[in-house]
Image (cartoon, rainbow, N blue to C red; front, side, top):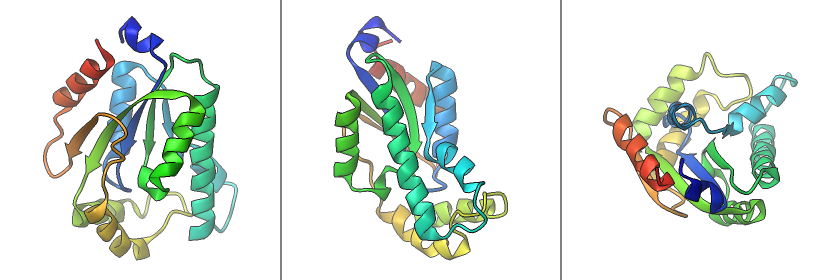
Length: 185
């Protein structure tokens, strides 16, 4: 990353998309390639989920909201030149909440990698993970809701957006080149 990127203020790369859209794979790729810290809702939420025997959907949502606040607290407490990769479904809260968190955290630059996925494919991927997900995540009953969500979801569009279309092979080179260009490398 160039010196100009590091001196312009905090930057976040939002790796956004509905559940099972490929966010985690993309976020890990970007974090490793650019050697940047990765913050994820599930990475913060799941250790807490492990402490409880029964987690219903409302409690899961509360844990997700708390994890979201933790992410923005970490970003807020970081030095001005930091760049973070953040893996989350940002549409689970109003866009205004994200804008408020960005402002409070001192973020001056937002880049977004939007993971586009049709509803049936998202549901298929989610269903394949049901047996390996930590208890407390929504189960099979969530699939019809996920189909509708994926078919209507959109990026936050608070800065430049790169769309990864998960109906096709991922253009890793194109994604990395886009982000390198955005970083000014």
